[in-house]
Image (cartoon, rainbow, N blue to C red; front, side, top):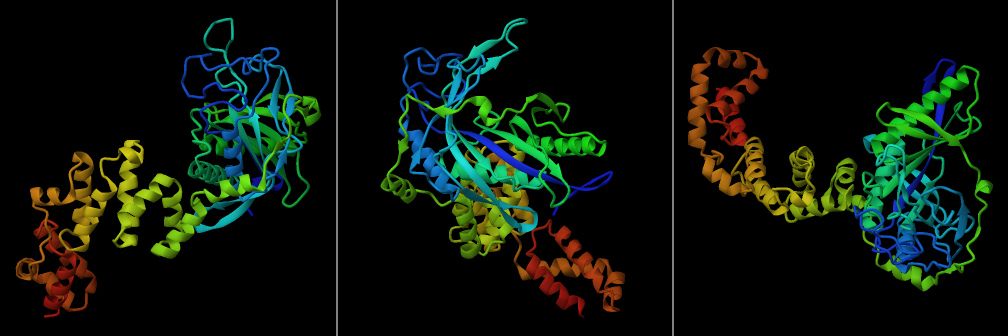
Length: 483
């Protein structure tokens, strides 16, 4: 159990997350208006989205399918009967004065997510529910010195609100939860998980208590748009609450915002209760009834998900759970690795993909599809290592040149004369020269200073410009130094 040390003893954080994931769909939840990101303000708005009188919502079947698929991906119960409710509140960017959501009977019930934690550890976090709802519009306060503008392009966009159980106890676990959830959504193709564009947003419910004690009063931090900010917000909020309680105060249940510039949470409003929204079934929408065959058909078309792929990589390729977890985090990365590993040593392939390749890719900021080194090209480099054409050390130099030029490894090796020297005669000559130049150290080695062996290896590699076959160097050197 991870605890926070306060002035008066240990405290435990209790964390639950509510994630709003925008459904991948070409049109909105109850209208045919488009959902493309970055369109001109108010250019993707139907009469339904604008809350015009007499307009009737019509359910989008694609959004229903995506919600069911997501529920199956979360190992959750699919409710064959669900109901849409009106959630009443008044704000400028909600033209109808209510949001169509689901309250008492959501489309998806309880499920689980397995977190991948540091050191290869895993643990389960419960999913309480997933429900479908429509998004509100957006208020723009920075377009005019004294007026606010309203953009209704997002109004009516389909959201899946995925609510976790309060099972997380550290900011790191919350970060791991969001990474795994985003990975599952992307594998399924139900949400692109792009937090910067607002298609995945997180509300954090945070409270503190004495270890194993009664649950404390929670505060909700609204609309946090990056995993790093979620973790920072939780850390700050937990310490804020502990300080208030230890000073004799009480926590007010409220909604707060996270100021990423200052790294702190700020009060926004007192927290509403469900009855404040006056939920009631939407009279314009019948209950949503799904057949078992409809759900079974969606389940039959599911892709291999991260946990299953990770288990397969461990069993089939002999990878460590950590390396397998890194590779399956994004579907494109896993596919790239499998293409590199095909017909080759999978552990060597994994080392190159997770090491040099991912290192260069992260520095470039490019998506894997735009990397100048393809899976075939990286496989070609590994082939040259395996057949002894180049050493592992020279391979790093070759890879850097491949990244810069986009040329294949074999061409770079020939052009730069980097082919590994496996001629035993040439290696013996270099070793003889090194031993002759360091006769005193040869004598020390033979008198029992075995640690000098590394010095001789280094000198031979230097003399051959790193081209000598390391295995042969070690073998011949040991024989010659033994006298």
